[in-house]
Image (cartoon, rainbow over all chains, first blue to last red; front, side, top):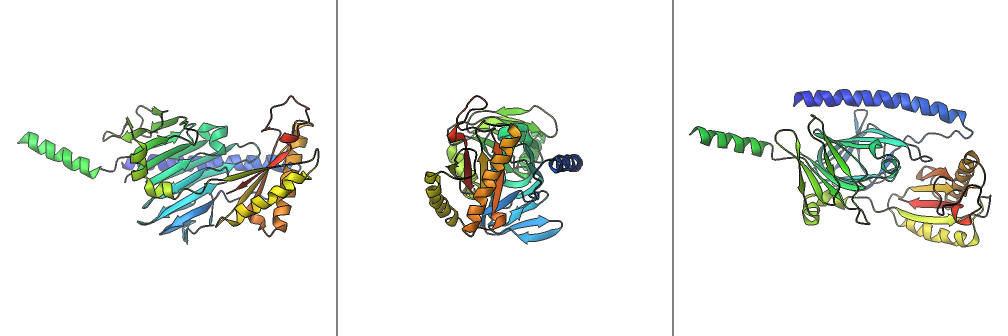
Length: 164
Length: 197
């Protein structure tokens, strides 16, 4: 079991390095084009929030209220009576039932080409997933990862339940 | 006696790991399911789900087994998560006069329906996606599409919407409503889609 945890941590790290390089690269490409615009750092917004919902960002904890914006690396948590619905820029949605925890490992989306990368780690709880433009463009670009498996494909809707 | 102990040990293990992972593929609004590939982290045989309510459940051995769930079972087990799904995106399409960012008269009137949808939502955010027909180069059309979206954004801001509640995108000629050969003027492709989310 311990081995599994370590394995996952290593993979997250590599993922973020790869993303760092990818975003540096795309920033260069954008700069060369005619209309540079301020990058949208926000990847998602909370649309539904019930009971206790919190967001952990850079070690700080914030209430997960309706309207709150989320970005890559944020951790979404719900309490015993909590549930939350999140809409991403590419129209993907994740909604979490009670006692759930999801880490937004990676979120990048180009709204012109629909190319992107969406990796979420579902640590525990029940989650309903709706795939959006990123998965429509490239099914493997959206991956839901649990401690036991990695999920991807052309599916538009599915549900995930992860025990501890 | 030994056998009893083994059974007891198995029963204890089973209850300690009662929380098995369960993944269920659901149909979309048209009844299609697509495919969901379940790749075990520890290695082992991947499972491919491609039927509505087909499921993968983790086993005690670290692998997964295939099974079938049902609409009722999913509704019961995932009630809270499903109930928290964000309301569906409301989509509107408005049309432009050729080569410009000026809306057609009919589309100017549709603006009222869009405003009503926006005010009905507690935390609305709007995505304006500009599209063009295939007259001109891809790069020019990307710029025109973006300009159409930006122009419509200004119109929404004049109605009191905050700058950070509106995202714009230009899809250029990538997503025509009507398929045409290149360099064909097609009014129905010169449009913006408004997504109220």
